[in-house]
Image (tube, rainbow, N blue to C red; front, side):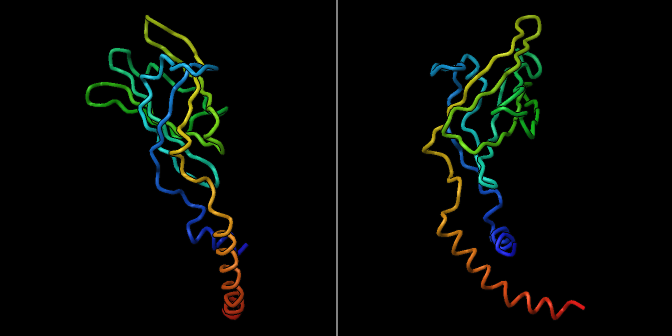
Length: 168
């Protein structure tokens, strides 16, 4: 338990700085660029937290299509997290959302709801393919973790005795 606390204290379980990662928005089940691709702003921002990728994506649609006409209903099998909707000065709709996954080297599936008032309404699946060479490392090197754990364990033993003396 002390080792886990030490790892947390040393920052190994905290969120790292975001990396910009390019991706393609593909028609579901194909390698063809999706018609919805133009609405996805690139690159995505990817961080690592608790041995998982945390991906933040940005969807932008023109004012002429109405307020927030494209919504992400599901992504990677779950509901998008931290959804933030913002209208820019030009009146365009911007939607930011986050999802987590252990594997960004595989394709990620999402379900979109499209509602352009009086013109088009539909739900479509889409696939995202991320550029693997740009991904941050998912796990710290095992040798480094072992060294930090050993160091934390060796430093914790004297602290227990000192702590015991302070307690009634």
